Length: 116
Image 1 (tube, rainbow, N blue to C red):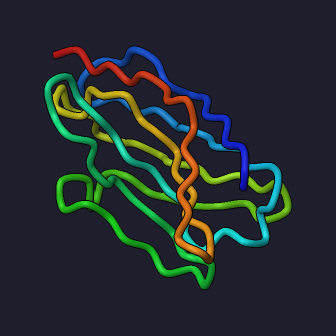
Image 2 (tube, rainbow, N blue to C red):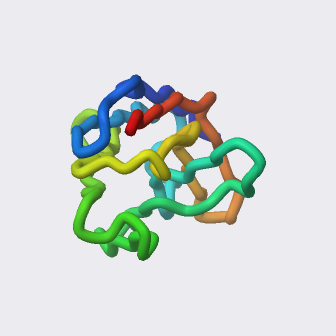
Protein backbone atom coordinates (compact mmCIF):
# COMPACT_ATOMS: atom_id res chain seq x y z
CA UNK A 1 0.00 0.00 0.00
CA UNK A 2 0.90 3.64 -0.30
CA UNK A 3 -0.10 6.73 1.62
CA UNK A 4 -1.14 9.76 -0.41
CA UNK A 5 -1.20 13.34 0.85
CA UNK A 6 -2.71 16.03 -1.36
CA UNK A 7 -2.17 19.76 -1.14
CA UNK A 8 -2.74 22.87 -3.21
CA UNK A 9 -6.50 23.24 -3.36
CA UNK A 10 -8.29 26.49 -2.73
CA UNK A 11 -10.55 29.19 -4.06
CA UNK A 12 -9.80 30.81 -7.40
CA UNK A 13 -11.68 32.96 -9.88
CA UNK A 14 -12.70 31.61 -13.26
CA UNK A 15 -9.78 31.77 -15.66
CA UNK A 16 -7.27 31.36 -12.87
CA UNK A 17 -4.80 28.59 -12.09
CA UNK A 18 -3.99 26.19 -9.29
CA UNK A 19 -1.43 23.44 -8.86
CA UNK A 20 -2.25 20.35 -6.86
CA UNK A 21 0.42 18.11 -5.38
CA UNK A 22 0.20 14.51 -4.22
CA UNK A 23 3.06 13.09 -2.19
CA UNK A 24 3.23 9.29 -2.07
CA UNK A 25 4.98 7.18 0.55
CA UNK A 26 5.19 3.49 1.28
CA UNK A 27 5.35 0.89 -1.50
CA UNK A 28 5.76 3.46 -4.26
CA UNK A 29 7.69 1.08 -6.50
CA UNK A 30 4.53 -0.99 -6.84
CA UNK A 31 2.44 1.87 -8.21
CA UNK A 32 1.24 1.12 -11.74
CA UNK A 33 -0.84 4.27 -12.30
CA UNK A 34 -1.10 7.47 -10.29
CA UNK A 35 -3.33 10.42 -10.92
CA UNK A 36 -6.30 12.54 -10.05
CA UNK A 37 -10.04 12.07 -9.79
CA UNK A 38 -12.66 14.58 -8.75
CA UNK A 39 -16.11 14.54 -7.27
CA UNK A 40 -18.54 17.43 -7.45
CA UNK A 41 -21.57 17.65 -5.15
CA UNK A 42 -24.28 15.25 -6.26
CA UNK A 43 -22.09 13.68 -8.94
CA UNK A 44 -20.05 10.53 -9.27
CA UNK A 45 -16.31 10.57 -8.88
CA UNK A 46 -14.65 10.94 -12.28
CA UNK A 47 -11.19 10.57 -13.72
CA UNK A 48 -9.29 13.79 -14.37
CA UNK A 49 -5.82 12.63 -15.38
CA UNK A 50 -3.51 9.68 -14.80
CA UNK A 51 0.08 8.82 -15.59
CA UNK A 52 1.34 5.28 -15.87
CA UNK A 53 4.55 3.73 -14.63
CA UNK A 54 5.85 3.99 -18.19
CA UNK A 55 4.82 7.62 -18.57
CA UNK A 56 1.62 7.24 -20.58
CA UNK A 57 -0.84 10.01 -19.78
CA UNK A 58 -4.61 10.02 -19.98
CA UNK A 59 -6.85 13.06 -19.60
CA UNK A 60 -10.59 13.48 -19.34
CA UNK A 61 -11.90 15.25 -22.42
CA UNK A 62 -13.22 18.06 -20.24
CA UNK A 63 -9.73 19.07 -19.07
CA UNK A 64 -7.62 18.44 -22.17
CA UNK A 65 -5.63 21.51 -23.11
CA UNK A 66 -6.18 23.11 -19.69
CA UNK A 67 -4.74 20.65 -17.16
CA UNK A 68 -1.30 19.05 -17.13
CA UNK A 69 -0.26 16.07 -15.04
CA UNK A 70 3.40 15.54 -14.22
CA UNK A 71 5.51 13.68 -11.72
CA UNK A 72 8.80 13.99 -9.91
CA UNK A 73 10.05 10.46 -9.31
CA UNK A 74 12.79 11.61 -6.96
CA UNK A 75 10.18 13.18 -4.69
CA UNK A 76 7.49 10.53 -5.25
CA UNK A 77 5.15 13.37 -6.05
CA UNK A 78 2.61 13.89 -8.82
CA UNK A 79 1.30 17.30 -9.78
CA UNK A 80 -1.78 18.60 -11.52
CA UNK A 81 -1.38 22.03 -13.06
CA UNK A 82 -4.83 23.46 -13.69
CA UNK A 83 -5.15 26.49 -15.95
CA UNK A 84 -8.14 28.34 -17.37
CA UNK A 85 -10.26 27.03 -14.54
CA UNK A 86 -14.03 27.03 -14.92
CA UNK A 87 -16.80 26.97 -12.31
CA UNK A 88 -17.60 23.43 -13.45
CA UNK A 89 -14.14 22.36 -12.28
CA UNK A 90 -15.32 22.91 -8.70
CA UNK A 91 -14.98 19.61 -6.85
CA UNK A 92 -13.03 17.68 -4.28
CA UNK A 93 -9.92 16.40 -6.02
CA UNK A 94 -8.54 13.03 -4.95
CA UNK A 95 -5.16 11.52 -5.63
CA UNK A 96 -5.34 7.87 -6.66
CA UNK A 97 -2.63 5.24 -6.90
CA UNK A 98 -3.41 1.93 -8.55
CA UNK A 99 -0.95 -0.78 -7.60
CA UNK A 100 0.40 -3.57 -9.81
CA UNK A 101 -2.15 -5.93 -8.20
CA UNK A 102 -4.96 -3.44 -9.05
CA UNK A 103 -5.43 -2.39 -5.41
CA UNK A 104 -6.34 1.28 -5.26
CA UNK A 105 -5.18 3.81 -2.69
CA UNK A 106 -6.87 7.17 -2.20
CA UNK A 107 -5.83 10.42 -0.62
CA UNK A 108 -8.06 12.41 1.69
CA UNK A 109 -9.04 14.91 -1.01
CA UNK A 110 -8.52 18.62 -1.47
CA UNK A 111 -11.26 21.13 -2.27
CA UNK A 112 -11.03 23.21 -5.43
CA UNK A 113 -13.60 25.99 -5.78
CA UNK A 114 -13.82 28.15 -8.90
CA UNK A 115 -15.95 31.26 -8.62
CA UNK A 116 -17.62 32.85 -11.62
